[in-house]
Structures are given as structure tokens and as C-alpha cells.
Image (cartoon, rainbow, N blue to C red; front, side, top):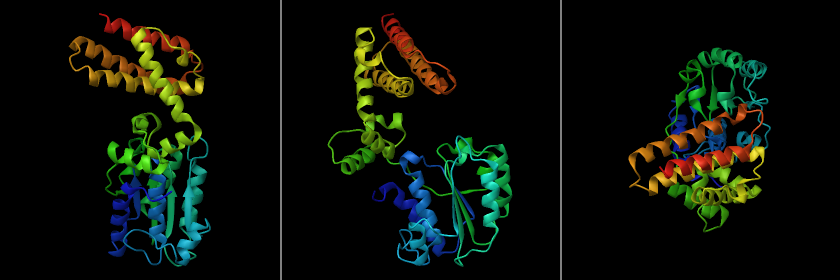
Length: 305
């Protein structure tokens, strides 16, 4: 995959910091993986390790870049969640490695993906290294939800300025990447980012999302749950609810002359849908048929008042 266009500016800014010897020791990158958070983090790590860094990132030709491309750089460390969390033993091991002398004579660079998954113990173990990182050490903490990080972690990291792409830019990029004229950007709020949409197309998930959208439009219009929503599996309930939220939001946008009380009720229903989606992770069993029928009935009752 080619470089995502909205990553170029933050990479160029970081390269300028490197050239001016004004680089920080820790950076928090609050960019979702679905928007390229992992790609951004790895490109910054590559630039930090590169012996001949340019204006747009690592050169790709020096020994350091070649080792990194081969996943064999001895001074590069990558941490990801072990299950649902980043555990304390992972961070203790990382901190120990970062205290050693760089084998390539340059920097030591660590990448922590989904850093919001640091638990209390692992976050505390990381604090000392963030406070006293050692010479020529840079840590990059990528987070889908940076607000979930402990304030003590967040406050010890610098930020790189970046702007997430507008929907029009995402639409154009998707059409070029997928070689299609179809506008798939509508499902961004469901899947989480343009890269996630590419994955959704590869797995056929995008077709299910379209079916849910058509199904909800038909169900809300008729007052009866349509067939495409009667056999949604437990794993697909979350997608179906997120699509329903988008459909309800579309109603609010299109029906500008809607009675104010109905608008408030509809907004409340949309919020309820997202609350239900959030609670799915702790629901032992979900009767999707009853849930969807109840939401369809509630919509028709409030719209008929």
C-alpha cells in the first residue's frame, strides 16, 4: 500500500525535528489504526533510525532501513497487546532492553501500538523510562483512544500535529485504492477508518453493511422488521446497531422540518442505540431479533405521535 496522503505532513514535521536535533524522547500519536496509526508510527520509527533521513522519511537504502524492512533491526522494539492488555512483563522487558547500548551505534526506538491497553501495572512500569529514557532513546505510543491513557503517561509525551482526512479525501483515496466509483466513505463511523474499509471490502463485510442499511430503511418505513435483519449473528449485532445509528442520524439531517419534540425523541433514540452497542461487550447473550423489533417499534411510535 502506498503512503497515505494525510500522513505526509506529520512525517515531514518529525524529519525536520530530526535534522534540527530537536527531537523529543517520547511521542503520543493519537491516530486510529483504521486511519493509518500503525503506518505513521512505523514510518516515524524508520526515520528515527535512518542514517540518511530525508525530508519525507527514512531513505530506505541505508543499513538501518534495510534491517528494519527485514524486521531484524536490533535497536527497534515493537510492543502490542497480549490479548486484551499490554502486560507489565512486556513493559519491564522493554525497559530493560532500552537500557542497553545501541548495537548499531545510533538510536534505540520503541513502538507501543494501542498504548491505551496498558494496564495500571504496565503503565506504572513505563513511567520511569518516560521520565528518564536514556540517551538516544525514542518511544512512540500509538493510541486509538488517547483519552484512555493515564494522565501521567500522556503528560510525558510530545505530540505531532496532524489532521485527519475529510470525508471527501477519504472517498477519493478509497476510489483510487479499490479502483471503484462507489462511495464507501459512508461507513467510516461503523468500521473506524479508510484502512478498515479496505479490509471490509476484502472480507465482504461492506456488503453486509449495505444490507443492514437497506434493511433498516425498509424496516423503519414499514414498521416491521425486514428479513435481512431477522438472522443477524451475535458477532454482527454491533455492525447492525452502528448502521441503525447512521440511518437515524440521516433522518435527523433530512427532516429539518421535523417537530421539535420528535427531534428530541429521535436524538434520544439514536443515543440509546449507541449505548446498546457499547454495552454489547458485557452482554452474555443478545436476542438480536427482539432487540431490533423493539427499536423498530419505538421508532414508529415516536414518529406517529
